[in-house]
Image 1: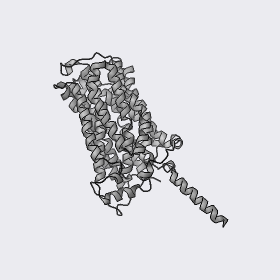
Image 2: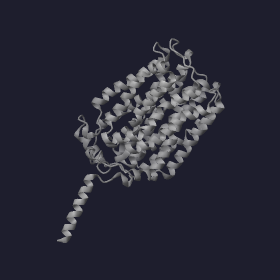
Image 3: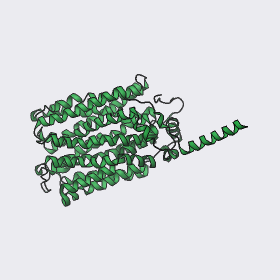
Image 4: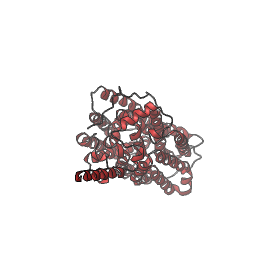
Length: 478
């Protein structure tokens, strides 16, 4: 059966409570993490062009291929720790793994300028690789937290709001990067900003964040009852959750999960191609300086963030009025997020420097509407298995990040001349094509039913079953 909202007449929850505070903190934490990923994409433009930044800082003459290595370095590490990170989040509950991932990576962000001065691009690549390794558990941690905190009826709105932190972090980074690079801080200030943002968030999260409602001391009894009642039939209590053995074979032979994995992978390539390459595309094809490029690059992600709230409200309205089921809602918004951007993305490959305004409109549509996919595949892991949502995210994100790290490498292989729009055209055709195929699979084969393997037997369940069978046999003998 599909997930259904509980009866609001039975238990009322506060309109704003502890679960909303947790979601706001997760939103900001993800924003901090994303600024660490995006900072090099915007800073590298200034690092390779002394005229676009404070002239007191060194300029680096790196090739396009070297640049592609640097932009993909984070994802090589990020890929490796997805599944181990998901197991850590499953074992420890999400709070501590999220804290360590963002804070430790933030420390490395502060050390980035020093690493470049000491070891040029090779040491920078190593540092980005380490940041990726550290951040591998972030999405699994968030999914684990959401599976404990957010009832099914609020999953589309509050869950998607948390992941809007990706767009907010991108907007924030691109808005401030041009100003910081041109200030007395120069391009190193971009990395200092992201590091300090992450450390401040970590301090607040340590004292306010909680792995589950039972671990939160600041929430009302009514809200705790509301959440725990909604979760009672789908998710194990926290003290039993960590003891549950992951049903690896059943997960890896699940068709709905494989469809989700492929959908998420197609999204990852398209999203990361746009995220890491827009600043370079703006400068090379549209002829924008770093300040103009930063402002223009941030506009699509600002639209992405704002449209997220529009789509969340629309999704809630359609489901609460009974116009769409959970399954229909997931596929409707996934279709909007994947298929609407296809044409604008392809058209970007036909733009020239005198069409910068039209190119910006296309980018706003492509990246802005893309957020609707967050209400589709991005919370589908929790639909399929609330108990193992973090594990599913870890596996799927591992595969997705093969695509993420291949995005800048693909661009580096195809775009040998950054000012050649025909080479960029090939990149955009690939991104648009993957969006189309990914959603087609999700429409035909995606599911939202809780899978049977969500309820594996714990050791306690097995002991109880053996005890029951023993008593039954003894009774039959009598």
